[in-house]
Amino acid sequence: MRVSTMLRISPAADPDSGLIDRITDLARRTEEAGFPGIWLGDSLGRGRATLDPLAVLATLSGVTRRVELGISVLQLPLRNPVELAHRVQSVQALSGGRLVLGIGSGSTRDDFELLGYDYDTRFRAFRQAIDTMRKVWNGEPVNGGRLSMWPGCTGGPPILIGAWRSPRWITYAAKETQGWTPSGRYSTLEDLEGGMRIYREAGGTNAVLANVSIDLKERPQSAELAKVAHFNLICPPEEARRRMRRLVDMGFDEVLIGSHYGELDDVERVREFV
Image (cartoon, rainbow, N blue to C red):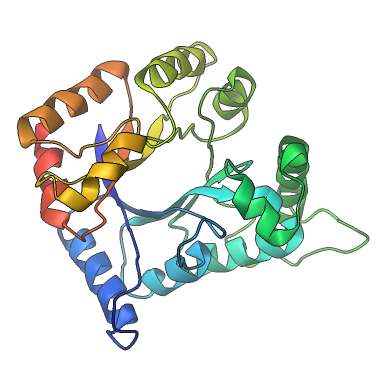
């Protein structure tokens, strides 16, 4: 099982604290440590300041050379699919083809309400956006026009489907895309075990568990996160070892682990467990 990192980017108390240096330094250290990928999440209206994940990955593409650059997961219904296909193509080109795009229908009503979009129709919008983006990346006409493809970007990047427990979408991930990516925050162990059965029976070959929070020091400020994140590594090292072995036994191909404190050492330590 591969172990990759998820960047947790939070504002510093001092707005002049060198955000770009902080992010790029962590990316360089992640690549130097031999991790296969650097991943980001996607949120807008949840009461905390966030950065656009594609903008961050475009930045990281300039300071790394080997690691995969991924999003798990980008909420498709919150974007115009043609404009988004163009931005994705840009990061794919800038990174030399290292982009891996996890996509989902969105799981949080607040993100939709912020933009004035209908949360209850998100699954239909998600499917329509997938179809539109694939047409764009294959050079097909959309809305009476055609987006010229950058050399080497035809067909788009590898796609993973974010689905916590929907048999329909887990099966779609197995048959139509390059992977399935549930969430450690939102998926219970029962969800993961049941989803894995569906995914493998449908022929899926790349199961990637995203959004696994880690704090082996169990800081007091991590206690609330530990209560709401169904699968996490906010625990002593020996318990983290047991939880990681559980993922191996389930058959996950990759796990994406993020520290809210930039503790790359914690992630390196659990990598040794598998």
